[in-house]
Image 1 (cartoon, rainbow, N blue to C red):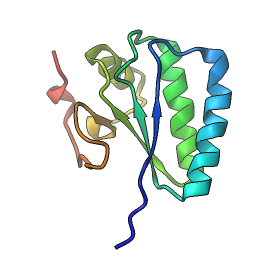
Image 2: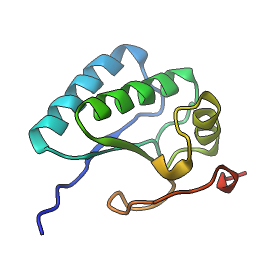
Image 3: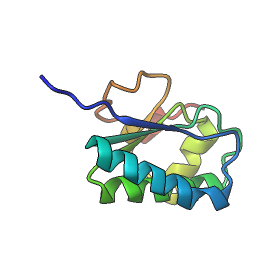
Image 4: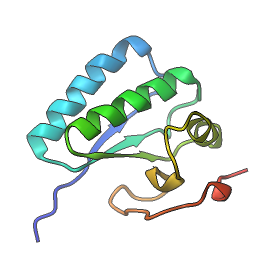
Length: 116
């Protein structure tokens, strides 16, 4: 069985909005080159859950979809989870994985399963 590894991109402590277009371009190129169907955005280092981070994740999600991939967010803070749900970027937390390896696919987590 031939499985294609997901593309993993790590966010820094704070997202610099000026760097998002270049990041999206690099992700798009990598997704097309590898034919990966999944983009994992590692948010574990992100210390500021603000609209800049939401914008970056929204643009990465759009970039992934245009390349035929889906976006999952790994290790987001509870504040980022709440903000993403609030703005409607994720419908369920199935697109967010907390503390799980990148290769495991989480089918669905309900919104009331959010960390306190």
